[in-house]
Every structure is written in structure tokens, then in C-alpha cells.
Length: 472
Image (cartoon, rainbow, N blue to C red; front, top):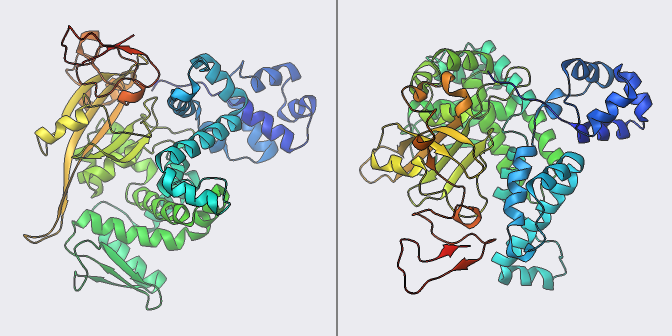
């Protein structure tokens, strides 16, 4: 698979300073010249395998921190934040943003935190007036935004949790067939927790309920088997990986208790998916079937959505999978889940581009819809989308319908079965999609809802077009 160079100048410099070493002393520890180290710290040279190994030997670092390249994410987030009209006339170029991120990543994060606070303040002025009157100056971030950023800047991958889940899967004999039975046995024998698989007096909106004092877990039996398995292993992960999960939450320094609670559930979900679809086995199976989500779902006894989500987490250093973005939208177009290990990043505000096949999937329920798409930055993707329906038994039970989408750069076409017979080499075969109308710079788009916030527009009252304005 195509490789990618790893630049980590800021991380190297921070590691050196945290150990109170000069460049010459640091270079000696890594067995490189001081001039070569200077080039590494200034992102003039990528990290080599020998330097990475030297870092492990000399400082016992976790390589996942160096191997996760967050520059693409930061550029996308900064580009959106800097499109704010308040910064008109003072927007740095994309190259300037990359330089800032390479040399001062914490400054870039700090700017985003500041801008996010400004956005929240603008959108919720009435409630923040009350906060300011009480003397609380710093606006509190929304809990889901905190968690979204936590996963976003960790590449949606947590190495220690993933490896713990893989070991647990081996120990429990996870095979895609007896996943549920293995979970029930583990809860009863190892943790002395009894499980009731019945709906009983649980409302249809409740998936599970854990009585900690009685050590009794109730699972709504009206859910699909794959969902029941997932909830059982989620509970096991919260018990067995509790120390690591709590450590990660503490180190993340969430500003709200609600954010920490949401992160705890989300990390438990990560562990459950990693247990049911252990990394090495899942990576090999995905490669063998060329990422056919239906075949993977059958092999691992998982749902299509669980498989799609897992494909977006294959970021283990030294054994990375094909990069995918994963997104889930509801029928109103609101994004309810989003993860990306590709250059494609999702807008923080607003819905997804209407030209994206994630919306088209609702027109053909249960079928996989393929699309070749090109984003404004010139990147091209193979995109698939499919609807998923969730409901409990019974005529009056609520029905939830979503569309889920996966996408990968066309560079990986030969590894993806859905790219077969598509004209990936033809520029005309690609739909010109965007991220969000408010930050999309395409001048001509028949589906544009609003003009970009950083571009002037003109209106000709004597000419009627699909879009009633022209972007200058």
C-alpha cells in the first residue's frame, strides 16, 4: 500500500526540551548528527525507521504519539475557522497554516479552542450572558464537541485499548459465531455478573441497564444479535480496561463532567468493536475480501455499521490499514457520527454536501451506492453509502433510519472491491462535492444553499439562474 512520510518536528523538539537536553545531547542519544536532528526538528527531513527505534530505546516513548499525523486535521479545522468573516483580510495561506502547525501545533490547537468558544458565544448569546454575569469568563465547550475533538486528534485509534481488546478476543475465543455465548460466560465466570436477555419492563428506548450493586446486567432482547453482543462486550471492556480508560479521560482534561462521561462510553464502544473485530485478524480479512463490508459483517458476526466504523480505526503504527472516512447521517442530513483517517474532514457546523452519495442512499434502501467524488482541494475518493434501519420488535416501536458512508482515496482503488469497473482514471467521472456550503469555494454548484462566508457575491436582477447569486 502507498506509504506516507512522517514529519514530527514539534514532537521531537518538545520531547528534547522536556528532558532538558541540548540538540547536541539529544542527537547523541539518538546516534545522529546535530545537523540532521536540526533538520528533523524543522520538518526538513521525515523521521526514519532507525530514528523511531532509537526514540523507543532511548526514551521508551509510545510510538503511536509520533505515528499519528494530525496536520491534515488541523489544516482542515483551521481553514474552516479562518473563513470566519471577523478575520476577513487577515487569512494566512494554506502553506502558512501548515508551517504554523508543523512548528507550533499547540498554538494552532489554542486558536481553535478560542474560536470554538467565540462560535459558541455567538450562537448562544443569551445563555452566555448569564454565565458572564456570574463571573465565569471562559465559555464552556459543548460535551459532544469535546469528545469529538478527543477522538479526532487521536486518529480514532487508541493503541493500548486496541491491543488489550485483541488479547481479550484471543483469550475468549472470539470467532464470529459464539461471540454472544463467550461474552455471557466471561461476565458470569470472571466477573460474577448475571445477565438477563429480555425486554421485561425496559422501554423500547433502553438498550441495556446495569445494576452495579446487584451485579446484574439487563439487555433488551428485542435488539439484533449483533447489537446484543456489542453491548455485552462493551460492559466487559468497561470493567477490564477501566484503569486505562480512566487514565485517558484524566489526561484529556475534559472541561465538562458530561464530556468525560460521553468519552467513557465512546471508549467502551471502541474496545467492544476492537474485541469483536480484533485488529490483526480483521485487517487480514479486510485485505483478503478487499473491504467488502457485507462479507466482513458475516465473518465477524457484526452489523454493517459496526464493520464500517471499525474500518475507520485501522491506524496501528507499523500495521496501518487502508485509510477510510466513516460518517452517519439521519434523514434530515444531520451528521450523527463522523471519523476520518483521510484528508477529507467534516465541517463542524451544518450538514453534509447534498451532492454526496450518503444522501442518495435513502433513495435505494438497503443497497450499496457507489460514487467517485472530488473535493475542492483536488483530492479524489471512492465512496460507498448504504442505509441502515434500527428498530425494536412490535408495530408501534420507533424506527430509526440512517445512511452510513465509507470513503477512501483513489490511490487505494485496487484494494477496494467497490472500485471495480469504475472509471477512476477519468476526471469527468468524479462528482464535485464539498464539505459545507459555508466554506466551499466552488463558484458553480447547482446545489449551493448559501454563499461561502469568506467570498463576496454579486446579484444580477435581470438574470435568473439556479443559484440567485454569483460568487466573485
